[in-house]
Length: 138
Image (cartoon, rainbow, N blue to C red):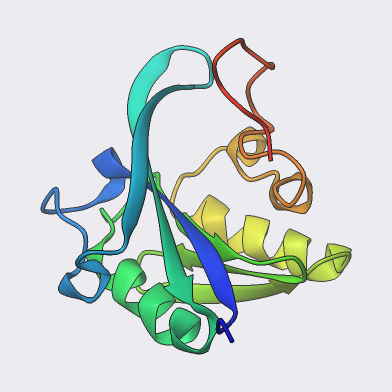
């Protein structure tokens, strides 16, 4: 039997020293280019991690992020952990108050609201960008 997993999504440029934390070694599934706000080229890293390790891994990510402008997230079908610099916020799917709370915290780090469309991320990987050929929505 396979244990439950969550998907982690990290912007490579968000990592303060340019590397994923050691806890993520050998977990990377893929990397691909993306346009942040349709203007800034970035690289997305996707990883699969065991669900029971997600809180600790989110905390490790929060410690590895640049101090401003970025977050990373881990999600499954029902919950999301958003890692901001030195902070992790839990969002249950459908909980608009938790989404608003996460957006308030993200604003403290200078993250534009349009880049924090957490409620949509269960259905669309990058809701802040238009659908483009070659970039799949989940």
